[in-house]
Length: 610
Ligand SMILES: Cc1cc2nc3c(=O)[nH]c(=O)nc-3n(C[C@H](O)[C@H](O)[C@H](O)COP(=O)(O)OP(=O)(O)OC[C@H]3O[C@@H](n4cnc5c(N)ncnc54)[C@H](O)[C@@H]3O)c2cc1C
Image (cartoon, rainbow, N blue to C red):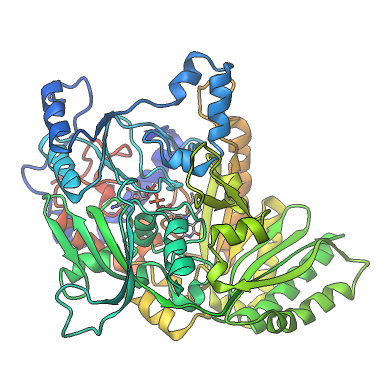
């Protein structure tokens, strides 16, 4: 990841470092004497020799790759057909995911640009990962780990680095009776799924739900990696009922900085296990296997969609107020999730999903809201008329069913010979290969749904939507969730604010795939900066009603202030102590990951004193 450090980011970094003094002194002093102060880059005298790389290649069975970016073709001939073809492929998430040099997000204005590593180990075994970790530690290299490659914040790429790429380790197997190692006396066996660190959710759901008739809690976007999402915390459409993905983790295998392969579960290395649940990927080691709980599958999944246009500002404000009342009184429970967006131009987009209800029940719930809208034709019109659909739950991620019955909802990997189950939601298309102008998020506390606060919330949302579109991700936030979901999520490293939040508000902007400096395909940085300004203004309106509310590690501002507190709140000191125990020299570094305050923004130079 190439950092574009400007004054703004330096100031923000300084503000983030200001958080450090509240950490226990023992943690700040725990850097070993022999820990390197600076990592090695190509061209440095101690960069490994060709012979050393050749030896690593032998150790990993020939799976060391000298990384070439497909963008080099565009740098040489930006207007050639080959470059045009590449940019078409950059709208296929499977193409990006299968390319060692690429990431789903191309970059972020004034923050980072996607940059390939010098070498990558395309790992196929835990042994490959052990060898790569050894090599990076012994040669003092900047190490990066990439699974699904869906980090908005550029955490799975870095120039001048060695990459451990787990894409090929994507096996998925179901268990009827899984017991974590060493837990036989404490936990009864339960149904579960074990996945490799390169598995993505769409394939995992296909195995667990379509073929296995069970449910596993993962993410919404099908091409996100399982390992990255679980370590971030991880929310999917039905998290209000089933909890976070992290809460469903039963066991992980992980290679730590000392190259030991460790089991982490409630009975073996429980501290590491807790840290992996929402402590943020790429910081504690390389996860080589994960086992997640599976649940009984509900009978139906369903969706409600509508887009309402308000003819005036006053009508839009009333609509927002009505929506909040309706949500708080009818939808604030384990059945409902997904997104409501307040768009610029006074449009309200409803794209919600439900489980545990049938179509008629869902229709009965929504009827009063749509009756209210229908009652004021002078104020509102539908740009998308309300629609409620259901499908047997077993078919939600079934490629054959979706292509037949819901063809507009899914897109396919269109490369010749691509597996037929390589599908993705068309709703995620805009994000494929995108270049970000900004991305900010905020946990909205459920206290805002109390009757005396609803009006302030509606005012803030209305004011925010004067500046930029605001998405309310109602499945991200456990308030209103099932007791089981809340209980399991409590025992993770995430900021406990997530337990009290009814939604995660996201305000973001993007443009299609673009790379700074690439002729004919460069982003419009001025326009991006203007958008970033609008995004900041919109978020300020929300922060006024939810001061200090915190943000989601995986979906948040690259320039997040006091990110330790924002992502982990009171859990940060405990998480940092775990980092110090398993990675005292800081081999694993990601932007705003645990312990990263000790390093320069690019992760190459230690900035904290021993
Ligand atoms: C289009 C899109 C949609 C998204 N939708 C959702 C959503 O619905 N719900 C949600 O909660 N989040 C969502 N996210 C955020 C996503 O969960 C996180 O960015 C997640 O970390 C991505 O994981 P990955 O493996 O795909 O990405 P990567 O970029 O490969 O990895 C992300 C981080 O995890 C680390 N990592 C990856 N694999 C390993 C491993 N095996 N061991 C140790 N560290 C590892 C990487 O080093 C990096 O720091 C979305 C992101 C995108 C881009």
